[in-house]
Image (cartoon, rainbow, N blue to C red; front, side):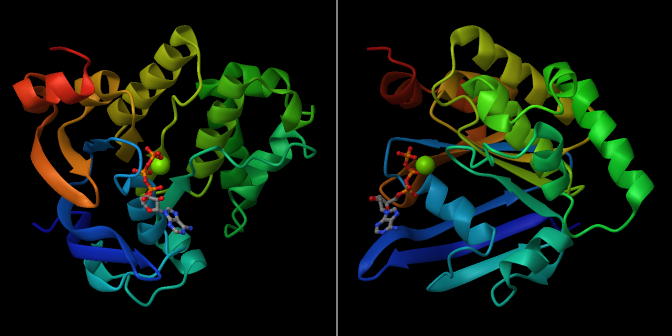
Length: 238
Ligand SMILES: Nc1ncnc2c1ncn2[C@@H]1O[C@H](COP(=O)(O)OP(=O)(O)OP(=O)(O)O)[C@@H](O)[C@H]1O
Ligand SMILES: [Mg+2]
């Protein structure tokens, strides 16, 4: 069986600067896979390339057996790859509900869309309570929930989350991580980029450690969580 996502020798550059230098990894259906690594390692660049927002200079991306190399971003969403970007990018003046609807812009099944809006409210009750309010009135953590809910509105086969816990209080972070675990238990396949290595590895099936554009270590979430070099570099132990 082929994996849902197969990335092989992927290289991405900004002008002459190569930010991703030939990385390979797979995501099997139903898995949570995490990319961890220091600032500037190339994690966001990798996700933006998978979404079609950046074009690779080399390597292969296969999603559901199909090469994404020449596929435009909106078709990639249609194929089932959704992206909740770093820094959220919600629309602050639009209502929470309209932000969610934007995530379904390629769908025309109205009753399915209504059902999925309800599902987002079940997952994040605060969004339902405040559905008619401007999204800019939400707290940082609530905006993160909205960004995740919006990404789910495209009914993705693979959900990519870029630093969902960034800038959140410990309680809010736990909430977001619990939601990711819940989505996983419902069968959602997730590619998770996180600075919080402990939280990400704890719930990931597999993880890859990135440093300056390369994957330097791969393993199961548990293996990496207990790896001495990972503990020293990313979990603050000496
Ligand atoms: N638009 C751009 N133009 C030029 N260089 C860029 C651009 N975006 C990112 N880079 C560079 O590419 C490298 C990888 O950046 P990227 O944002 O992918 O890292 P990251 O792993 O997501 O880091 P962080 O954890 O800080 O979010 C960095 O050296 C960064 O400065
Ligand atoms: Mg980043």
